[in-house]
Length: 228
Image (cartoon, rainbow, N blue to C red):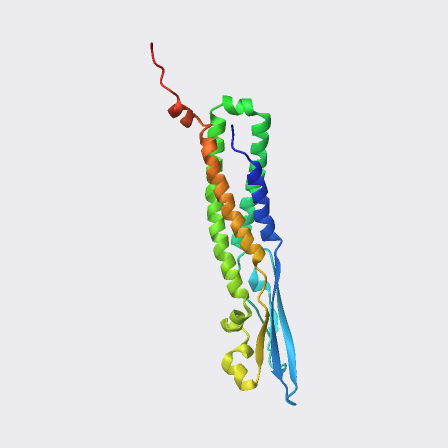
């Protein structure tokens, strides 16, 4: 009996679907004190979507001193490599598990007859177990950095890419108040990480069933013939 592929298909879909469907917003407000002491509040919004190239999410500063030379700033980081690797592993794993399911159902006799097929299936599944583990670890690290870089407080203090007016000393001197409106909703990305490691676990557990179909297990598990 070959390893079931249905569970692998479902959780693979959830893994890359929860990654590519995330759309979140990081938003903050800058309250400026005008010459007539009337406060003017200006909001800045950063829209983030897959594949999470944060450096492309720019907005114009300065906010309060409109006479100064404007420049484009925003969150730092490009996490597209980790995101696209994670999604690619998920899509390829889905396609392979679909193909394997067809073989298990329609070509079971040949699967059992030819020793090379179970061995190839086992080796490929072993590779997917490793890829899921690697991609999930890289993606978990990337999500942590995405959450950090999209925090408005961290955007204010990111050097040349930051918002000078929100620096503590500058804001205090000029009567500017910067407040966080939204830090972004990353629940979907956190769920995608869980599905990634769940995929690694399921593929790893299925290796046991696949190994039992290989010639290595059958050779070692074959009982000795006793002569009466």
